[in-house]
Length: 266
Image (cartoon, rainbow, N blue to C red; front, top):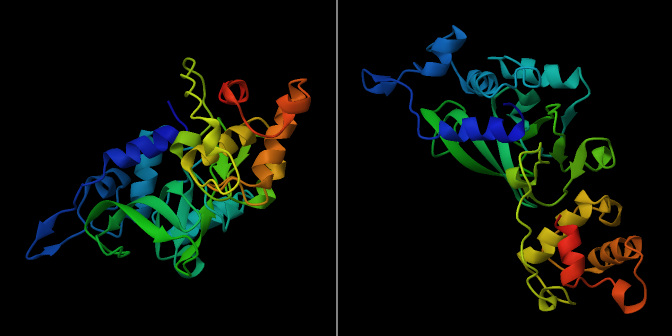
C-alpha cells in the first residue's frame, strides 16, 4: 500500500518517539538514522525518508538527509509550490535548508505537520517526533514538495487548479479529502437541513458541501477554495450542479435540499 494517506498514517504512528539521551543531553541517536546509515546526525529529512520507505512512497518522496537536496528533487520535477499540499513535504528556513516535515492538514491560517527531530517549541534540532501547528504565512515556511501520488493530490496552489489528478482546496483540507483509491462505498452523510445554507450561515456543513462540489468538477466557482461561510460562490456552484441534473425552476435555485446533498455526497 502507498499513497498520501499511508504516508500520513505511518508518520503519525511515530509521534511520541524520542531519540537517545546520554550524558545529560539528547544525542541524535535514533531508529531512523540507524536505518539510513547516518546515525547521531540531524534527522528531520531522514525521518521523512524513513516514512516514505515504510509507506511504499519512495518513488514520490526522495531519500534525503540534507534538506536542500529534497527541495531540488521536487523543483527539478516541476513539483514545488509555496502553497500547502496534503501529504506534501514542507521545507523550512532559508532555501528550505533548515528543517522539513509532512503536512497532514491546512486551513486558512495554519499548516499541521508531523516532524522528526523537533520539540515542543518547534526547534529544527529537537528530541523526537511531534505533531506541530505552524503559521501558514510564516517567513520560516519556505515551500512544499508535491508528491506525484497515484490517487492524485490535494493542493492549495491556484496554478494547479484544473490539472488532471488535482483536487484544489485553497482554504482548508486534510487527509480526509484525499481522493479514494477504492475499497468499498463510503456511507453518505445525512442532509443536515436547509437552515445551514442561507445568507450569513457560517458552519462546517458549508465547507463539506463546497468540497463535494469541487470533487464534482465545480471548483471554478471558488477563487480560493470552499470555506465555512455560505456565499455566492457556493450558491452558483450548487445551481450549476442542479442544472446538470436536468432540474429547473425552484429545483435549481442554488440552495441544497436532501436530493442535491445526496447526489453531491456520492
